[in-house]
Image (cartoon, rainbow, N blue to C red; front, side, top):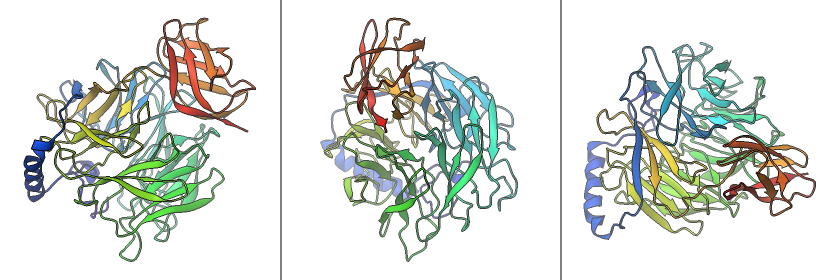
Length: 490
């Protein structure tokens, strides 16, 4: 990784963040000065599983490390380290109550998974390894691979060759409404500055755009398909040089038309993660450094490229260095974590409204976790979960935690894909589904019968009169609304 990424901790590939002793002293002083005005904590963070406490455990989860909910209602993700012999990373599942099962230990030839996982409509989970696979890259450690994994842990790999197809992917690919997966690589491509690629469900991998100094470079965050159908992403730009912006936001169509949406001038800090789209259509993200106090910031940008700074972290009780991206929670709040700052300088969980009202809700305390860099995830049971790089009662090798007490903590349903045509099959995750007694309504339309596979997974056919809007699932005991609008495509 580029040496200018001065927020990174010293674990494999130097991808986790750390502070100098001088910076920690400044943060401690800021916390002391700001403690009198700190908000009363009504939200709690609790570890549901300390990592590293059992033989073969995953340890030290880190960015981007996306968490996905499976059809079975469990959560799935990866870590770049594991306690099993020879492991350079793990893939695991964990129940909402904290029962953890390691599904795969990655060998060095397979590579280290930094990506986390994304659920596809094929029922498999998709991710990447940063190295491993073909050995033709400059570091001689492999160029990285895309993989898909069954819910039981069987993997298929699709390697990068390190040339024009790209190399060293950080984030997982995401599935677009056309059924094709799209992702980025940090390096490789024509100028060795990274690529955008597509990969089919059968594993045919094709580069579709190369980055360079004129349009940003070194993308590490996951792509986002917005409601306008475009794919949006970010570049870090650390090797771009002094005469160009150090980070960009871009869009690309599934037909491969690229556009630079916004370039950050005189950028102060790295943009590690991708974007999230709020209900009003604007895109939100985090910057790990920069801002008024050089402690990071939250920004939003319209799809037309009008950017605004929504919150500058002050290094005290509101946190510092938001490496993780933002989660769009039910109700419209955007929530995230900082890697540092907070009450004990170990990080803070926060939310911000679309109107820009920022609330630091709860600190990480070492027992519940420390230094989180993974974007939190809201399960369809309504509870927000996440994992932290360090902390835990005994081992200090990370936790899988939950956040409770939030006003929007209530069950909902989630769509595997948020767009489709009339007649297409929509996959829905949730709870309490009952065969023959569960219906689906598209944006208030007439209810239709659902095909219930299990209590946590069903499918429905988009009816002829469906219109764009929220989807409602009615079970014998509850009426559940989707956390995203479903886009009816022509």
